Image (cartoon, rainbow, N blue to C red; front, side):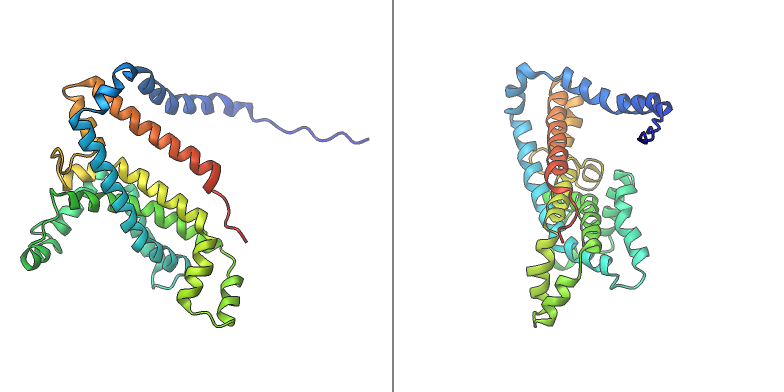
Length: 266
């Protein structure tokens, strides 16, 4: 009887791997450990926290909806390489993931500010001003969060078995019907994953928001900005609000890993 070969275990990776894990996990555990759980209710029901939470939920949902409306078509165009220089365009789509958030805010200012490339036209023609408004918060969140939706969906569109689409076209279905009845349902899990990741990133956006929209309570002060403000005067409130955002992010990632991050169904 032939004995199975023993699997090589690279134990030399154990120490640096555990160090990396500790480096990433210890700050998160410390945050939860220091959270003032006894006064959580009072902190979260304060007018400042409630306004910031309400604004964060509203703006992040709107930003995610906007990202879905324009990001789904963009992901399909990139996956099918319909547009010229697709590799270059994909690089531009991914740039907001790599830019420092403050730079993203500056870019939005020079584009959509009152004297920006597009903003001056909007202001002079329609009287629309985006910086330092709630709409500016939505714009900043959508700018930094949309790439999560696009890259998630692009991978799903690329791995999709196109025989089902081809069969539907052969049977006389229009392009819109094929996309709505065949393509979107097949990439549904990836669409949900991308949308939730996009929402979570929008919920936690800070740098671009404070640079482009400012930090005005009730108007542009989202939860991350409230944390920044509270850190200067009330450390316990800052830790409590940070813990809430941390728990939301952990919950989102656990839910996605367990239910949605799966290969596209054949």
